[in-house]
Every structure is written in C-alpha cells, then in structure tokens.
Length: 321
Image 1 (cartoon, helix red, strand yellow):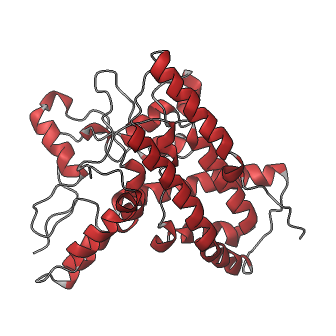
Image 2: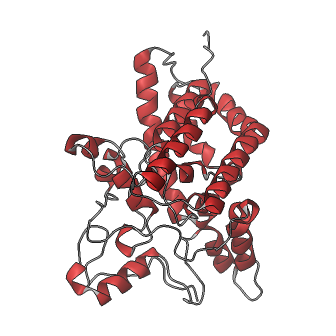
C-alpha cells in the first residue's frame, strides 16, 4: 500500500491560531465582544501549547510505534480514499468522546487533562492549553481497534489533527448559540462552554470533539442555560500561571495521596483510578456529590439536565473502609 504524506494540520495552523486569538482579543477589548483575557493567563496557555508540541515531537513515536505494531494484525485495509478518510474521522471522533469521558472519570487520565480546564477564562487561547503528559496515561491504546480493523496509523494521526483543529474555534464566548441544526449535530462554543464550566449542572458533560451527537447518544449532553452562565476553571482552582505547575500539579497531588501512609492497597488504587474527588475518608467531593448538594439546596432543579433526582442523588463512590 502506498502511504500518502499527510500534513501536520495543527502545526500548519499555528499562524492561524495566533491571528484568531489577536482578532478575538481586539473584539473583546475594543468592540465590546463577550469574553475576557488576562495577560498572564493567555501567556500560560501559549506556553502550555508550546510544551505540548515539544512533548509530541519527543514522545510521539511511542504511540505511533504501538499503532504500527497493531497495524500488522489488521483484518482489512480501508486505504486513503475520501470516504475512508471521512469514515476514519467519524470513528476516531467516537474514540475521542470515550477518551474524553474517561479523562473526566478517572483521576489517572484527569491528571494530564486537568491543565486544559485550569484557566478561569474562556477564550481561543484556552484551546492551546494542552497536556504535556498525555503519552504517560497510555490512552493511545484506544486507537488500536481502529488500526486493527484497517485504518493506517498515518491516517489516524491525520484525522486526530483535524479533530483538534476543529475544536480550536469552539473555545470562545464571542459566539453565542448557532443554527439549531448545527447545534444538534456538531460541537459548538455553547456546548463546549458547558464542558469547561464548574457549575454543578455542567460538571462531566459534553465530552464531544467534533460531533455532539455522541453526547446525545450516551446521555452526557447538557445544554447551556441563559439563567446559569458558565463559571470556568476547576472545582478547586490552583491559582498559578506557572506552566510547569499547571502541567504537573495534579500528578504530584495524586501520587502524594496514593503514597500516603496507612492506606490499604485498594485505597491506593482508587486514589489513582477512581473519579476525581474520591477520598478514602470522604473528606472530598466528586462531581456526583457536588450535583447532589446543589439539588438539596435547589430542589426545584431536581432532575433537570445535568442534575440528579433529589431522591436518587448519590456520590460517585463511597469511601473505602
């Protein structure tokens, strides 16, 4: 099979990213567009994006090598026709949905993904606040089935880049809700604002990359409400613009918890792989508990999208004895 040379679309788009950020900044500052910028926050996001590119150059061979190894066991070859590229993009977008959902429900993966949520501002520069440590989570294995059924690793890398390119423009407050048909099928700024919000109803929602239909199919879709505007950041904000602290703070906290004295093996395991917010003594709260607390304070919100019924509200996991 002749393998075409696909461009690295995310690296080629860097000038476009910078230009779009500057345009959004001008709109917000001088034309009263919705949104906010903070110089140190924006610089931190740009440095995080730079670090992500460097880590990809240094460590990208690991994931690609694993996919090339899996490729030899393929059961079919889809090739590189336009329909094969489209099919690969759709299936890889579904793969991204499940990666993203796991990233919010397992602390091991949350440790690398949390930096993308660490900004308390929501603008196009936030899209560049990417992980430096994604390779270490091992989540690239989710692409192995796509290689086994016949999509070449080169094509998988290409469509993954297209997906990230699409996701850039949805990190903005300057665009409100779009056409109803578009909002139904595709991820949009409105949908992704929900994903970045810390409001209880919005926690762990809208994991989509390009197609919001996955959230609608698997029950994780929550609409943005005018009466509950998103508040950005993480539940416990870290209060730093240092890119190294942003990149590694959750890894350090996670291992500190897991290696604390006096814990059982099960408790150490759960500190690594249970949902964020789990603790062996119940001293912390996960998203399920935060949602339940909100419903207890606002019973009129019971059962609405993103929130549990008052009678069934329960935490993610009970403390381990």
